[in-house]
Length: 168
Image (cartoon, rainbow, N blue to C red; front, top):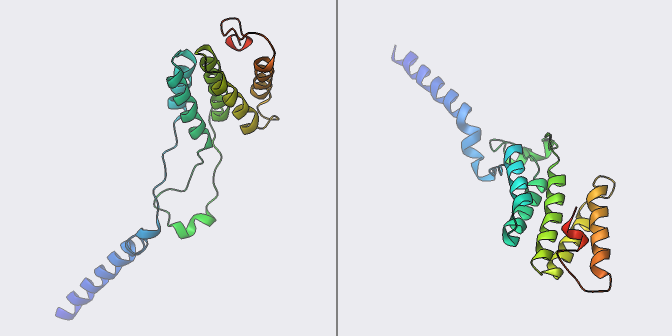
């Protein structure tokens, strides 16, 4: 009878080790997945970007949206790192395009910077839109940035109130 009890104990121990063994042995190679921003949080950040007149607030929102747009969905944190190469990264499927939100907010940041007299910063933001977004997919934003860059280089006095960047 004692032999049956020890066989059951051994079997239970083996099953327990089998079920948890992979997690215990491979925990050092796993990384936790960064949380991607939800559509609503990106939308709220975008709305905040569009409604704020504070340069630093708009710049911060543009940066956060760009980071959210660049975030890819990664495997769940319980997938061992050694298996990452077998897991297909899924595209972001949302009702809004995070990159379009980021591009629009970056244009807003350029507009706000210009209104605050920070012309060089505005120009850098406009060039960032031209260089960071494929023209095929983000034609409006890239074209708008190019027009505003041309306007910034047009000779004459720079009046941020009447400047074309202040109205789009």
